[in-house]
Amino acid sequence: MSERKKSPAWQRKEGKNPKGGLNAKGRASYNKKAKSKGNEGLKKPAPNPKTEKDKARKKSFCARMKGMKKKNTSSKTAKDPNSRINKSLRAWNC
Image (cartoon, rainbow, N blue to C red):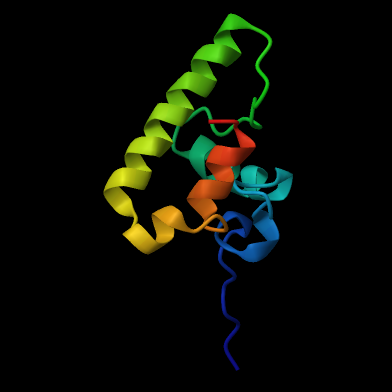
């Protein structure tokens, strides 16, 4: 009997936030992989930014995700309020 390797939490339901994006467990599993490659990793969302740095981060995220929505989703997914991308945009108040 062979033991199958589990996929990381950020790729499974347990690592995803029901409101869109990743939860703490999902971010931790992604960061474990990303930091091994020399990346900074993911931070938690800043939907109501207080500092200039957070405002710039929100603006960048919103612009990037709106571009992804246009380019990478079907018209059905783009209009679906329960799609992961729309939930994520809503969570960031984009």
